[in-house]
Amino acid sequence: MVELDDVAKQIIAELQKDGRTPFAAIAKKLGLSEGAIRQRYSKLKELGLIQVVAVTDPMQLGFERQAMIGIGVTGRIEPVADAVQVLPEVTYVVITAGPYDLLVEVVCESDEHMLDLISNKIRRIEGVSQTDALMYLQLRKQTYSWGVR
Amino acid sequence: MVELDDVAKQIIAELQKDGRTPFAAIAKKLGLSEGAIRQRYSKLKELGLIQVVAVTDPMQLGFERQAMIGIGVTGRIEPVADAVQVLPEVTYVVITAGPYDLLVEVVCESDEHMLDLISNKIRRIEGVSQTDALMYLQLRKQTYSWGVR
DNA sequence: AGTGAAACGACCGTAGA
DNA sequence: TCTACGGTCGTTTCACT
Image (cartoon, rainbow over all chains, first blue to last red; front, side, top):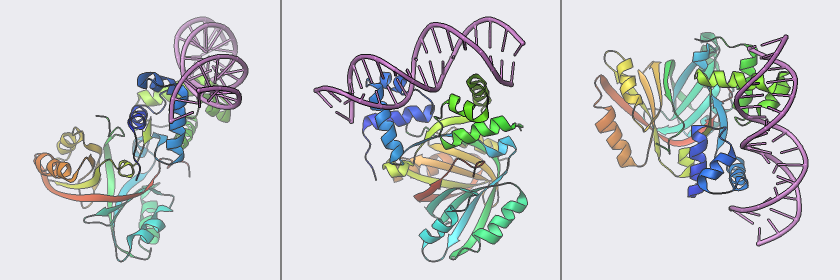
């Protein structure tokens, strides 16, 4: 775990609103030099604490089928998480406490692709005891500015 | 639904890798002018098809408690989705087919905050018949470059 | 960690095919 | 929708604190 100071938090907050905000603009807002902001951004990025990326809704673009797979695991969860997260269709993996041990978001090109992924890849992983597919019908909200409000 | 041509898809793919990639660099790669890329980016953004943002792992920063709430709904799902997505703690809402009708990701400051949110806000929404909280223990993978591979 | 300055490159408006 | 161009602004590097 990492402790971030106020400057780092504010840089993150600005970039959560618009990831292309010039460092100079952030610098002006925070009363620091451009270089200081860029230096901090580079470090945050290097440490894997932040990434600036384009996000879209694949379904809205007519691309693919999407689902969240709830997985029940017997035995240790980590090895299953490791095995799942190397699959290219998998965009999101989180270990959870509750009805499932693992939540896995997947993006597929078709129903057949999805079926193959679940039946022949995910369900055959050692330790997977149960899978529930929650097919995405419509994405309603997607926000990245949680610290801001 | 929107049909994107190849240029748009490639712009998105580049920005999925690094959202701060200069338009000029993308232009060079695609053999177009910088202005063309900027113009297309602006339009994609305006249409809400793409957003460039900073993403982090709140838990890794020691910030908050996170969970996915699986919600069962009686009657129409859309009004419930609307009511849920205005809550500031809610970062993600998707209508699904499967064990739940709605998946809702929430970021809270503490267990008490989470409890209050679920008991006093979400469960009191008209039409909510069931909620399962899947508390996040550890985020393992988070990718935004699905079209790329 | 942060500053400042100079060279370079990116961005953005406007005009035009 | 795209290109071209010029002025403005952002980024990079380096020497310094």
